[in-house]
Image 1 (cartoon, rainbow, N blue to C red):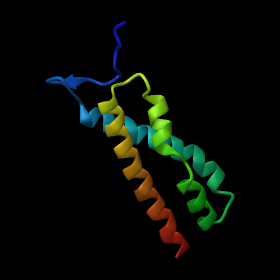
Image 2: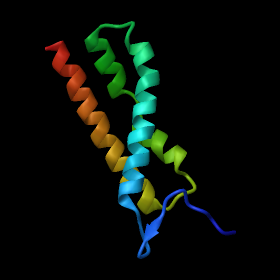
Image 3: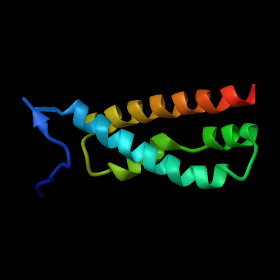
Length: 94
């Protein structure tokens, strides 16, 4: 069966920019949802809960029909975004 990817390929390689843009959008949509819950707890608790969110697993689940190369790019990006956001939240706790 032919699999159709949501991402373009350039010279046989996945379009990294397109994957990272999708990952940015996915992360910030999740963050908007999570912020509704985090708004009701103190900053330290929000940071603790945020660190427990399995962002990499969520991305893998969303992209399960994509190639491992695409999934890996997205997982790396979402881990980077989550780390930045967590550092930002933790800076308020200090």
